[in-house]
Length: 359
Image 1 (spheres, rainbow, N blue to C red):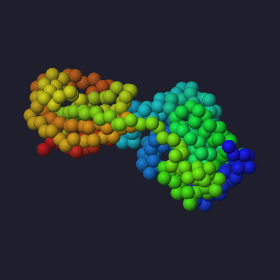
Image 2: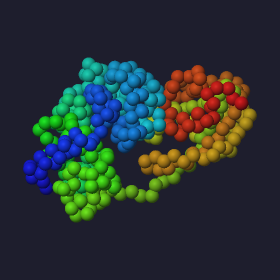
Image 3: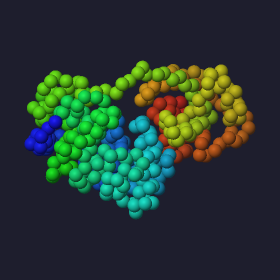
Image 4: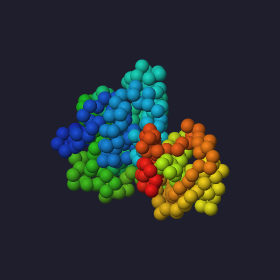
């Protein structure tokens, strides 16, 4: 375990490196208000910076403050999030904005405890909001920081274990300098993101001389990895049911589970059931049916093998008889408001809804 002198050296070396080498032009760094930091930190959870930047810019342009985010519909929020994945983050962000308006007069709380009472904000995210926007002396422990500290102190074990996590939190707090907290916080995150990666570039690391894992040649062993089993496969048949004007039938997914709250194509158990499903469920007759190329979509815990079937239909009765505007809709890209869809659904919509007249 490091003594206080080493701790001071660690922080000062990081700050010196940040001044000369690190990223200072990320969009959330140019105006680090609590709101912008909060949005960026939520987006950056389990997502790389390069992927986040265009989503962040679009999001804060549409919802430039907490009030506008709270006033938005869930569909508007999820539409901006479509393709970014881990959609519970968006739902929590939206719910937290509403709570901030109701309980905190539209201002994000300025204490760790109050921030952590908001949906989707844990200790590390709360610490990042306070440290980066206000220079408050709060430690953070995102995935990048865990990797840096685990290697520097040669901490064995998977950080998801309580004992390992407790050690890392203690080290994160111990290394905090007395000043330049926002710069130090950004520096240690950037070090993990750009240098101390899964395969580290130790030659470029400003704290390599004191890194215990490097000294013992165990950089790739620290931190320990989460035990994983063989990834499961899930087969899904999705129906792209299309009217003559290009409108496609969509259903809202349950609030929990994959793609929670997003709009998706209906799913059936057997391809042979498609025509009957359209007749019974939608009062529509299938004019043309086409099995499309299978799509493989990887999720955290399993791979989804999507078998899409395109069905051109005509109503035999009142086509919207089963429509519940909260749970299902005939969606037309040209005439309908943007809604939230998972990436593979949006891709299929773009390819086969044609956003207009059917050919």
